[in-house]
Amino acid sequence: MSGFDPSLSYAIGPDRHLRARCRCKLMVVVHTDRWVAEGLIGQRLSKFSDRLRCQCGARSVTLEVWSGPPDPQLLAGGGIYPFR
Image (cartoon, rainbow, N blue to C red; front, side, top):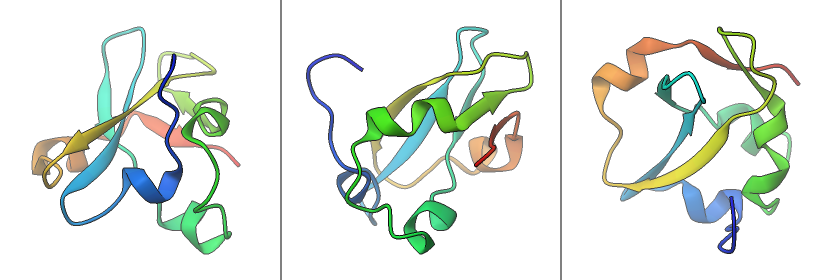
């Protein structure tokens, strides 16, 4: 992310959601419940990109805040997973 680096709390809500995009073009909705439960809600999104791994082997992904509810097809996908 360059410039705008919102907190996790900004990225989640009824009117927005967080997506991860890998350089292999895979894009999925990120499930943030675990990070919220760990008390990381105030952390900047840039701190989370290296906490995700793609099925292609990439060790870092780009995080994007999207408006509206998540697309059900992206929720079912998978392929980018938190590892810690």
